[in-house]
Length: 433
Ligand SMILES: Cc1ncc(COP(=O)(O)O)c(C=O)c1O
Image 1 (cartoon, rainbow, N blue to C red):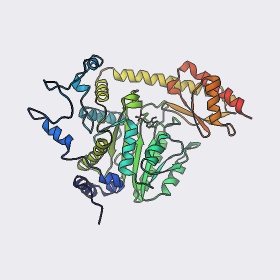
Image 2: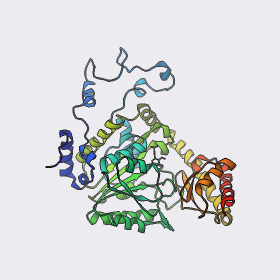
Image 3: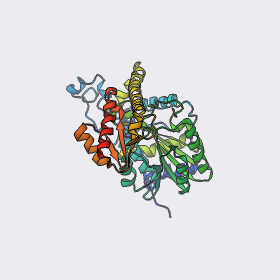
Image 4: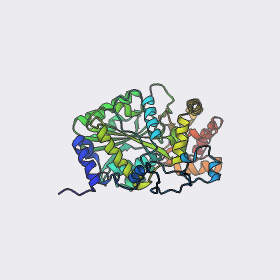
C-alpha cells in the first residue's frame, strides 16, 4: 500500500498524477507530502475579510481597522501603512506576481508556452531551497557545471541529501559534450541545474550553444527520461556581447516536451540591485501541464513557503511594485547596465593590453555577462596564499577556489580595475617559483 498523505496533499497528488504523470513522477517524497492547508488559518482569514467585525487576523489594528504602524516607521517610508506592515499573502502580493509574469513575457518574447503565476520567495536562495524540497530525495543526482556557486552544496546536498554531479564547464567553449555524456550516464529522473549569467565565471552560453543544449535535453526527453531543469536566472539581463543568449533559457525549453518540467528561479535581488530586499520568484513551465495542474503545483509551493518563511517581506514587495510601476525605472536600469558594461569593457581592455605578461601567470576563463569573471591561475601557485597576499600587501579583496580566482568587477570602480589586475599579476609573480 502506498504512503498515506494528508487528504489535501492526496487531492493535489491525484490530480497531478492524472493530468501530468511525468511531472508528478519528479516530485520528491516531501514534495508529495506538502500541500497548502485548505481550511487553515490563512484561508479562514481570507474569508473573514468580508466580515463587518474581523477578529481573525494575527495582527494588531487601530480602532478604524487600519494596521497599527509606529509613527517613526510611517515617517521613514512614504507608503501607506497597509503597504508597509501587514503580512503579505503566502503566495506573494497578487499585483506583483502578475506584474512579474508580464515582465518575464516582455523580456523573453520567444517564450510561447503557458506558465504558472510566479510565487514570491525570500530571495533566490529560498526559491532554490524550495525546489530541493519539492523535487529532490536523498541520493538523487543534481547535474551542474563543475564551476558553480558554492551555496548549492548547502542547499541541495546538505539540506536534501542530493549528490552534486558535475560536467566540465569549458573545453575551449562551453563543454556541451561533457554535459551530454553526464546526463546520458544518469537515465531515469534527471535533475539539471543551469545558471546564466553564471556565478562564478560570468559566462552566458551563446545563442548557438543554447540551441545545441536544447537539442541535447530534447533528445533525452524523447528517450523517455523525466527531466527537471532548474534555471537560476539571478543575474538575468546583464549580457555584454552580441550573439550571447539574451533571453532566459526558459524560452528555449518552453513547451518543448511532456517529459520536461522547467523551474525558472529569478528575482529582484541581483537584477534590480536590491540584494537585502530578499525577493525571488519561482515559475513553472511544462508542456504536460495545464491551468489546473499549474495551480496544484503553485499550491504545493505555497505550502513550502508557508512552512518555511510563512510569506515574503511585505515592504520589499510594495517597494518593488512601486518601482516597477514607475515611469523612470527602465531608464535607471539602463544607466546601471551601462555602468557595469563599462567595467566589463575595462576588464577586457586590461587583459588584452597586458596579455603577453599576464598569460604567463594567469588566463581568463570565457566571460561575457553578469557580475564576475574568473582567472585560471598557473599551476604551482597556491590560490589561498595568493588571496592572503593580495589582501595584506596590496589591499585587494577577491575570491579564490582551488585553482581559480574570481573578480567581481560589478563592485569595482572602472578607474580601479587596472590596479586590481596589476596587483594580481605582481602577487602571482612573487609566488611563482
Ligand atoms: C548564481 C546565484 N544564484 C542565487 C544567488 C542568491 O540570490 P539571493 O540573494 O536572491 O538569495 C546568488 C548569490 O550570490 C548567486 O550567485
